[in-house]
Image (cartoon, rainbow, N blue to C red; front, side, top):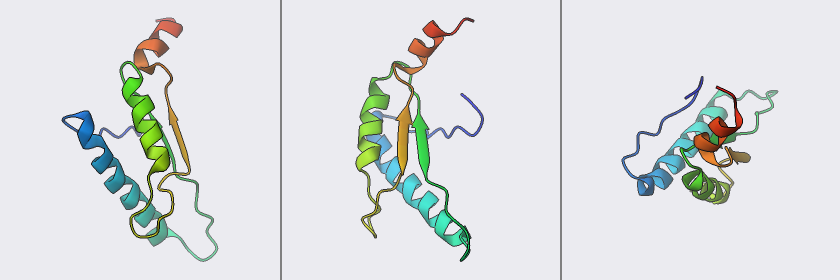
Length: 95
């Protein structure tokens, strides 16, 4: 893993959408609570990585469609994933 990575500690992949919804809404609420009149809020970006990549492709597509349940606005401004997962990345990088 890497610095500032967040492990959702989900047991199965089907648990991930609920976790991501709660996480996205919590981050959005923290942004609003910490914003001042003259503060420009930073875009909410999220990057995901998985072992082989297929779960990341599914979760990235899902995250791009997620909306705040109260406002209907997107939860994330930019969503990325590591193409091919960690295994593909390790194949490309010399170890």
